[in-house]
Image (cartoon, rainbow, N blue to C red; front, side, top):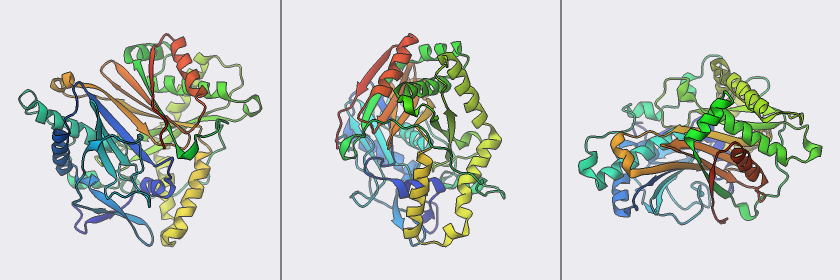
Length: 419
């Protein structure tokens, strides 16, 4: 690490993840790349060793201080191993026996990077994964891929920067109302023993883009509105006055010039209360309008100030950690009650042309206490990664029916339920 003291403070989002992770919602993110050939674990380990030298920001362990946790660099070596547990496993906490808060696993043709969300977000994770995959492929196909480089050429200081603190202005104070009204949550019982169920949906990207264009929206609004409508179909009649709220992580690097590999995102919400008379086409347009309104730069800036400003409250600064963490958990639970599900669009994955013959696709999951859907695309394939804490799958079934009703074919894969 570039920090002369070999340690640094956590950003605001990381503090929330540390206080609220549990055995079900481990606050772990997974990004994966599937190749066109079986993984060689020896070469993958060598590729990981090379990648760590380029991105040492991941080589940290989280320590507990009196007032806050902090991150400390470590020389512990990350060891590649075959996947042997559920996606998004526990990577921090008293039950975790490891040192590092990320891991690289493989299964068949797939390479997985899993990390505790306190150390990075989706953008930082994908940056690491892309460099790892390139290093691996260059070891396997040196002559064909020599000369190719990936990843930002930014400095180590830029990649380690807490961009929340850097871009929070003099008005960095929380708004009067931080928490919204309660949203609808499925009445289905949750899976026992803190389990999660994982689904992977493969769609034709061209078909999705064409259908979204018919509705005059982008793929994110299209998927978000269908997910919202699927929840409505699942709602008991007595609860249909409650709003359905889809929360969407927003990469703040699109609003502020930042090369950080640490967390730098906010969530925007699209909330809608159904009347029961909506046409699906009208809902899709309304979802798109509300999403675009929430993404206005001034609103994004104010929301960033809302969250960053909480740390400026003097009581939060001087209170010991054993008091702060229950408070953070309490307010986070209030916040989660205002959200029905999360939809995260990680974007279109692009690689140098010479790498394309070796890459089949990408996918992602995130742990959750309710339902979390990721979107990402590569070549002709759009992949939705769904993690769910619910035993009932009716919302997902309805969502798939909506897609097929729009003539979009869906290939669906489901994981076994593991403790």
